[in-house]
Length: 197
Image (cartoon, rainbow, N blue to C red; front, side):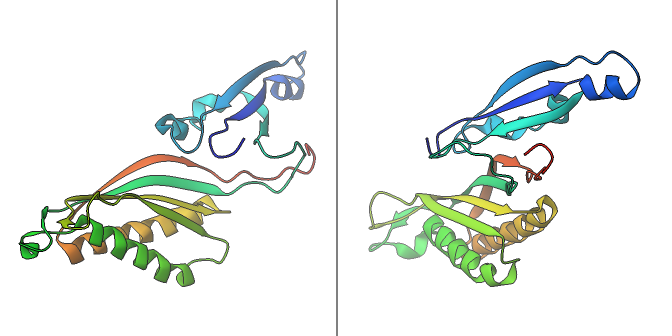
């Protein structure tokens, strides 16, 4: 269980539409596995519109420490790797020649902390420094932050994400580094359904 666990969904296809149109309803079930949210770039394609063509209902299971029906929905999420490219140099002998990618990551982290008071209180922003160097005597030419943001509203999240990307651009400008953002995955918020629960 935990962060590496997969998600499973069961879809019922076609029955409701046929019943509404006076045809004999039948349904076909499909079981799909959602890749682990931490590592699979394909996760963002799991919510492609074609996957839900002719789907009447989706039953979704999220692993946890117990099985239960929880009808609280789920937050929309975007997950990306934010990489800064700088210029390496010896930190004692020639620091002025370097352009620190690690400084850019740290400035971005500070920017995220200041941004927290300017976004809706139910927004979540999480990050780690996933590449921060191997020796303190080097001005780093590469550093990376893994960034995740969540919100109960996909539209709100997209606005917050745009602001996070401006923070990243600002960090690159302040350090004369270049920015590379690779989106790993995203998902829309899950809307609760009292009838099915």
